[in-house]
Image 1: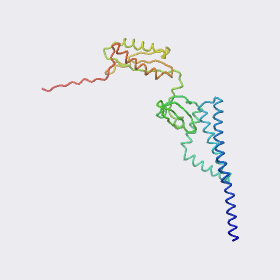
Image 2: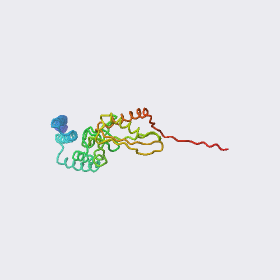
Image 3: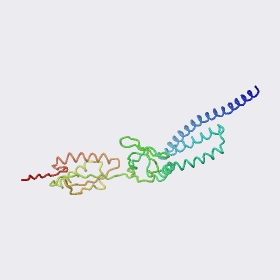
Image 4: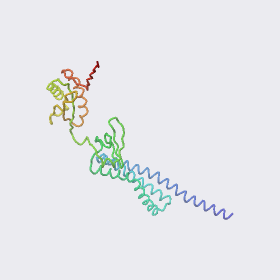
Length: 272
């Protein structure tokens, strides 16, 4: 009976000791995660009030969020009774192994740092990279988030964005709009020039300097192709492009100019 009572006391002691550790670890984890999220929200508001670059805001918020949560988990393990010296050594070895296994992820982290340092693009820019085009909404630690013109969300790793070819449409204040309008052989080229110049002069969004260009670009199989190039503010690129296509279609017909389409003559020879 004494051994049974002794064993019961030992078991109860273990339950009490480790049970309190578990409760303390859970309490630390819950409160710690709440504090971590609160601190991240505070940092976001602070960065926003300080008018820090929005690209840097999302990056730093993500970075601090991960660091705070790692600290909370390590603290909770310490409260649970895990020997932190050996645990940190084990964590370091595991981190090395994970780092080797996730070398691509580390490259994405380095890519995010390079993007923010060299400022190849920022939040709000319209870019084309890795086969996608869209407006940059966030630059996070490992990925950048784009929104396409048709409102799709595209998540692109930072590594390829930092090391690959990228087109940023938002860095220059003005852009050139190019068209190629075809008229039929036999149509009056000067009349076509006059119609195009009139349409360009009516559109206030088209800049006078640099001056528009009108030229015969090619004598194609079925048409005489007239190249038209104008300069506009970057935000007006697509509205001007679409509007001019519509106006040319309407006014070429009124001016007696024909917009040709590919044709093929078929000759049939009857054998005698």
